[in-house]
Length: 263
Length: 96
Image (cartoon, rainbow over the protein chains, first blue to last red):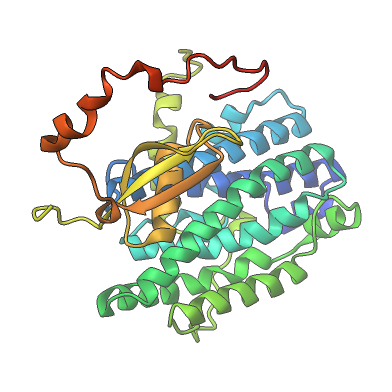
């Protein structure tokens, strides 16, 4: 049975729930980090190329910390590398927004801004987690995320309130991505138990902060809030868009072709 | 530069430690001051090189011309008495 099935989640013990939650955090960072790394050498200008790759590295670093901790919590002898390179698509728990292909630069900026805003408020709360390891990771990551959000917010303003073409491209990107944002605030039995233990925050309050910040920036960038009400979900159950499989194939290829290779 | 299709150039100055002056480290392209600071942060402070950044539009800098070198700088070559070499620097004073 797949790990994410509703029945499995109900029967998970507290440690398994924490492992599941850590996978959600770590996988989202790993996948968005990988997506951003695809821009390496392709950025619109040298400075922005470096900026994006810095951000990509921050996310991969954050994913490493979280997945290492997840492996420890799981206690079955797996390593962070095992989790990153030897799990298949259906075992990945990253949010759907993180796996969406880069598209044009406006799309990448919009995806990053919507996700950074979420990360900013989520990790702000995780800093006071009762789980000391998670809290320590969150303290370090939150500083990085604060910069990411500043960088992507500035680009939202410049592209949104820039030329007619940049405005149109960014508005299209926001419209296209909007259906993936609801999933960020979904909570299930895993969240419920960990919230009760004071390990993770209730996402209801984070959703309010996210909406406020996103609305502010969109308004300042002269962009419209999308009216679409369709919500694309599934990552909690390991149900992904068609894009994740291709991403994993590329990301995991070397490790799987040369198992246990060391360098 | 007429053939430069990129954004304007900003000269970047970094302060490495509190109390010392900002030093010129290079330049970046950016559409405006805020992005110039962010680009400078990303290009020049990745390895903890600084704690403060200044950016200045390159075209706001006025420079002396190479032709002025003789008149400007050579007259001081034979005036060693202008160097404060007779002072003792108190112990503990850094970055002088």
